[in-house]
Image 1 (cartoon, rainbow, N blue to C red):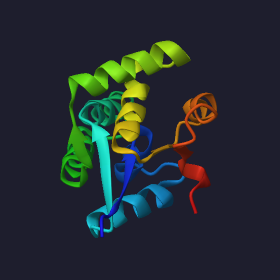
Image 2: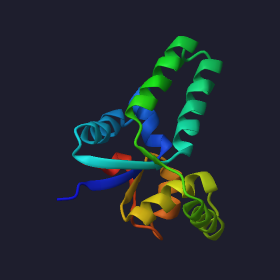
Image 3: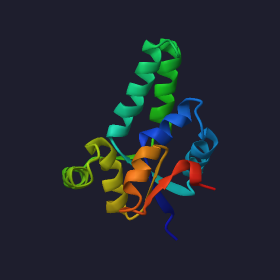
Length: 144
């Protein structure tokens, strides 16, 4: 029996390493992945996006450089399956243009569509904009 799959974006994964709202829900998804009960996917861009959040937190002195490095190493250890495909990038670009959203955000959606799975995001603005056209976009806060 095949495991179910979810795409997760940086707004969810950053909660694996930083204490933010709905962290418990994000950690539950991570734990299901680590227990091999769920497959998680994301574009390779995820590492750069979460890394950038950590870098900003170091710059604003919310994290020490050592804390930031530890969080980044944990991200690399716990990372979902990272995907990189020119065809999916092309699809993401077309979705972004058609729906006036960033290509970054639409990359996550394009991989979810390609893999026929839901995309979980904590980004309420992206969810509100995209869920009507793409019901596979789910809001982390709504997960039970």
